[in-house]
Length: 193
Image 1 (tube, rainbow, N blue to C red):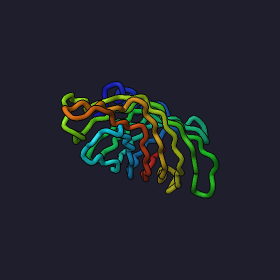
Image 2: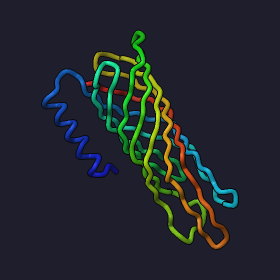
Image 3: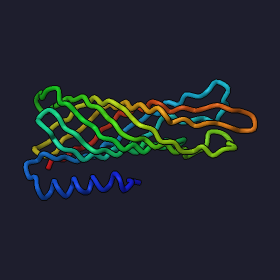
Image 4: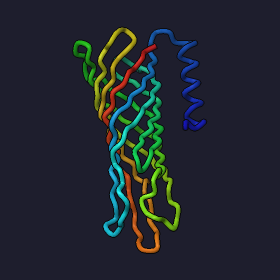
């Protein structure tokens, strides 16, 4: 669920774009695809199977600063059988070149990531089922122009988090499970307005 701190700027940006700007400097998009959340366990931890593979959905609302640089507000939901991530971040993309209808780009992501356990990995004494962390990432991808307003968007994203650590304290074992890296391969549509 989008928090009020993210929803309010998105609504403001949407209202400004529809009332002030009419030269298609703004864009919005939806992407979805495969995701992998790397789980590193302390050696003495015995857990149920931790599913690292799943899917993700990304919603973006952005502004084209120039023909080669844009900035956007993004929300990403990553889901698998074991955990879910809610990522709120600012992204910037730099278009490397335009070749026919393709426009390859590289980008940076900076924001907040929230992890929630959907299925507990072991029987826990403590209920350490939630964590939040700063997130830093990079993206490489390309858009493909479908018409003057619509683009296909496909990319690979790698995000790094530092503080998604679940502390395991049970009657028989102690240790940690860390989620530091998430990978995503996405395909979506971007609309310029």
